[in-house]
Length: 215
DNA sequence: CGGAAGATCCACT
DNA sequence: GTGGATCTTCCGA
Image (cartoon, rainbow, N blue to C red; front, side):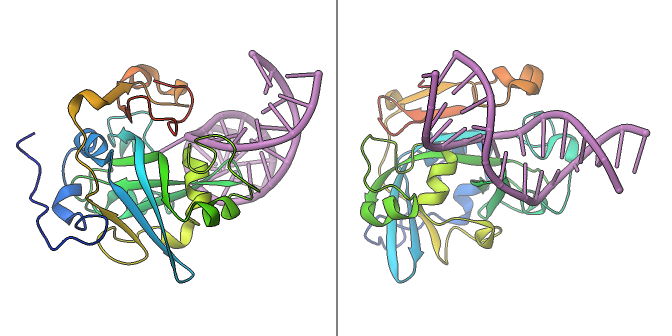
């Protein structure tokens, strides 16, 4: 708790922009502290805003579930090995993208997957980007990593972008009390052996936008 | 150079 | 609950 960097720059509408120092810490700490933050996407002249409600930490070379497992460095994962504060976006299952926030120091390959968020501004436009005529249930807009990227028009064009400037910015948002956070094993990584059980998934308790399986 | 698998989502039974 | 969509990425041969 005492290791949170000061975020006292002049506040914009959704709180101050998170400084690069916020990201350059251990991935599980950043994953927990990203809950309640606002992700502001500038797209075609408008702002789309969501509040992060679910994250997962990926620890790098020692984590079999991580794309940086055993230090793997490929064209795809290059941005994972940069210093914290940039985006790592990848394409999966032939049709979806996933958004990661790179954490820690350069070379350690750690990151946080942004799994789910609550719509705050631009719900109508996000529903359109998702190709939903209307959102019928909570979580339809951004209740999963693939949905979130569709809703915010995130694709490989944003790979490597900084989160403290540009068209995808993280702002301080709300302070989340520790008893509002629930933890569990990560989703979709059963192949990862011992790492599959590590409690690196974080979510806001009882938030309807959290993806399945519920924590 | 081929093939298998994937940090997902949706429709259908 | 199950399977199909869809294609990049990566590893092994």
